[in-house]
Length: 88
Length: 110
Image 1 (spheres, rainbow over the protein chains, first blue to last red):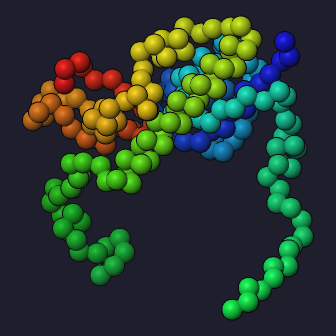
Image 2: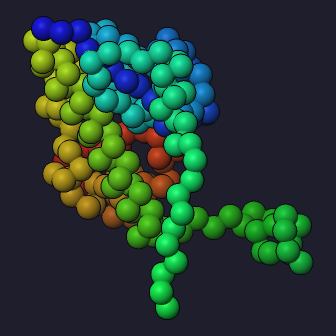
Image 3: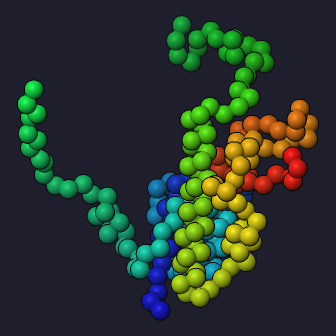
């Protein structure tokens, strides 16, 4: 049994939602939209995600990425492509 | 004429905020997409915990009681029970924060 992680991304803001809900997000370490955090697959974290399931996107990954790797993921490929003109 | 200070009926004073009585088809599409997103989160949690041989009461309760998007009736997807409404139903968009809360069950028979 290998350790795996929940990759949790805050998709919807919790503005105007109850204090309890925002507290759960704070406990998960989610402060702003599109922020991604990793937590181990445990019932305790699954329960927290259940509380905010309408606000987050979750996937299961086998290791937690560092902030640097997350940033690298978002970086567009360098350089450019030459597109061939479509003959008219 | 245009912009924030245009003279439309809702803006030129008075209490005139019109909320349509039903959802548009684009609102319905997005509503279904949101329902499916919640279903997918629940499925992910369930699969991940099952792999570890763990379980969670909240998750079991949800799976037991809540229908998935495909199982829900259109009536329950887009409307909500209200005892003060004619025929006991109103659009789900009247529910505060309706895009960010789960509202899937209604009283049986209504």
